[in-house]
Image 1 (tube, rainbow, N blue to C red):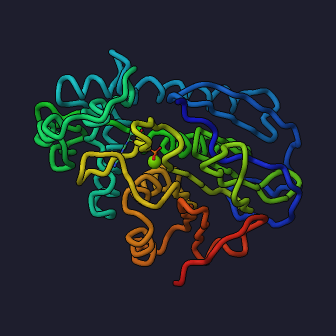
Image 2: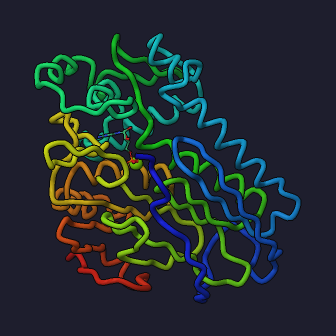
Length: 337
Ligand code: AMP
Ligand code: MG
């Protein structure tokens, strides 16, 4: 199942000035341009304000297409494949992402682990045939997996023999950060929906907030919660409904627990992280989905620099207190600080 747009922009006119690096909203060109592309195995929808001659849209598309290629674990001639085959690369994007992954992995007790590619493939993700593997087949992969199998030094990434990296948990967030930087440099506001990742940049010309929706895991056309965001922000969802297979009535999703080498199975359906960077939001949402709600709340309490929405299997929506004043619509419970 292809990963689809997880969070949707609704164009509601609500007022609030955002703090950002862009010109005052009232001064902006009101031209709206939209583009949709397919990259990183998902649909990407871009909306820009004031990109009159299409230059910025062309630059963003070029960034997304470049990363689609260089960070692909399946393209035979990508920078990532070169690393996975030769054990070393000095490709700047790969080095940056590997280093960021080490940081987030350390922050999340190893819940984020970018060495799980052989394990994902054994379960059938990224191949044509899903299957629950034999425990012995999973155990046989243990020597190839673990964040201790990769080293970042002297501007290069090296991995142990047999270890393969996968940036599926981070690449779209990183892409959003690069696009945002390009838009801020050009003074262009907009909203990017890169699969499950939303990036807002600057303030709309009418000064109203950005409105995003947190998808119902049981009905991707519905939103359990809509939130108002101002200025530049990243909102990223990870869940068990985006890519999965069913066997004997059990749902096996694409996010794996590095401790069990198996798809995460718990009471959570999704976690959405709202914070000030795409890569950070992407890495944390995947890790928080692995950790489950209780450990995720403990992480939120200790880090204190992101907001989150947890959706439970029984439909309960939990939000961090910082999001309370941002809710436009939806029922929720607030996490105790
Ligand atoms: P996301 O949709 O951002 O939560 O990322 C999920 C993708 O990251 C999966 O499709 C895998 O490619 C990869 N992945 C799965 N489990 C993990 C994990 N525990 N840590 C890092 N990447 C993972
Ligand atoms: Mg992620």
